[in-house]
Amino acid sequence: MLNSDYRNILYPCNLGITLSADFSESLTENLTRFINGAFDSFFYNIYVNKWSLNQHFIVNLGREENIRKNEQFNETVTLYPTNIFYASLKRIQNLHRYSTFRLGITNLPLYSSTKKNLIFLYGEAHINRKCAVVSTYNLRDIQMNLQNEPPIVKERIIKESIHELGHLILGNNHCINSDCVMNYSNNLQKVDEKSIFPCNSCDEKLKEIREIYNF
Ligand SMILES: [Zn+2]
Ligand SMILES: [Zn+2]
Image (cartoon, rainbow, N blue to C red; front, top):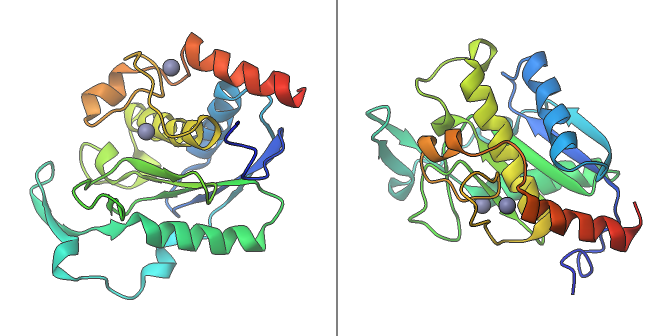
């Protein structure tokens, strides 16, 4: 059974992206351009809104388990569980029903609400809820405003966004090809080494979906 069946997905479909407020125009443009390149003709339209996810986190979640030391920046930060983002994205999704999938990109640091040892995640997808979240927090070498982000960081954000959308379309599995965007990356070196696009074998799976849905 295709994983699109039980989720009532019809392809092509629309994608909604909710961005953290500090995204530049050029990053937004490149993000949609490369998503369309990776998932050719899967999306009729990509709608972008900048309703900041962060506004849902006014209440400080500063429970002890959420406060961790970040080795990369040598600082102690509050981490946010992914399920709160899914709930927030679902709320936005209910206001914008024309989008089948929704991707949220935040600058807040994340931990997985299902596997609590997975901290400072680059991203996570919730297949059943048809939404995914990417955090720019650990994709940066130093903390700075995204308007001035170097190209390598923008590329990482786009790669991890395509990776999580790939899960929403293809399912939970990771690709074994180390240069494929669907390869699992647990450090920046791996992110930088892989391609921004799916490999031939992942492309074949996308092609199968296109054939089934006739597009
Ligand atoms: Zn993954
Ligand atoms: Zn692949």
